[in-house]
Image 1: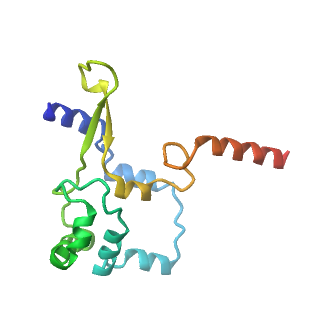
Image 2: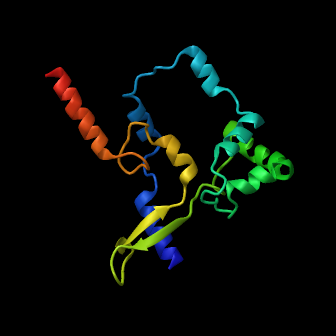
Length: 163
């Protein structure tokens, strides 16, 4: 069952755009960073940033693939910090492969009574720490504390203002 579920969801969610596809997509995006901002954005990562990122995580959010939630690393940083930093800095600064950690746990919830195929399940990804960075602050649907109706009201108010 695990292999069937894994291959099904990898097929659905895996990235199929190669490097040339990404370059093509980015060719339509104007560069808007200053030289100073670009220098800061391309600077090497440091241990302080790794520690800061760890401490910005919710302590009891979904654990990583290793089963440890952030609170473990936060509480035992004095023991595991050096090794965690070495790994993270190798990935971030030197391009080390992330294959060993580039995964997430999912829970599958049946959409119907007595499901018979994988399309009868809804996957719930347990990857809460990165997604909030990827979701724009103006997205209102499917985000806690935000309603899609807020945008409808905003659009209505804008139309009234410009009319």
